[in-house]
Length: 193
Image (cartoon, rainbow, N blue to C red; front, side, top):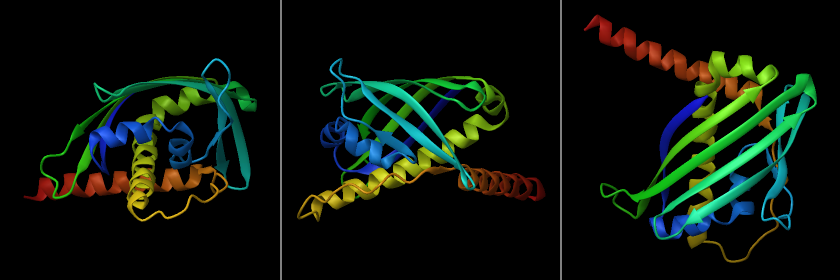
């Protein structure tokens, strides 16, 4: 599954790349992510909790990251699995940062390119709605990251991180449905003119 997208966060690209390099902080912005302490090999063990109503599926895996502070780029490579119906995922994400010259305050545009290999029950999911769901998850991450970075100016003391909130499959599905209806409405509106 191939995905490309972009989002904006407050701050200058040089500051944002350093914030992105704070992997535990960024994991708190990813819906459902759980991160363990960094391993000796530099990778980050962890997982993602996905809630299907009252049922929760725990994906366990490992992520490696690389950052080029001068080029304002980075990458993330992750692999994980869940016991449920042999669900497997492998993800490669590359991103680049650039200044948004049209913004009134310092703002960074984050361009993302991602390729995911989904196996087991997730393979069908990728064919039927994976890109739409990736858009919703990226939008949620962008919102959380923007809120996190906006706090930097007002943060007085560092507080303990909150417990991770599972990624709600129902919430993601509802957001995808709303986006599809909005898209359909725009198409129908164009057809009437």
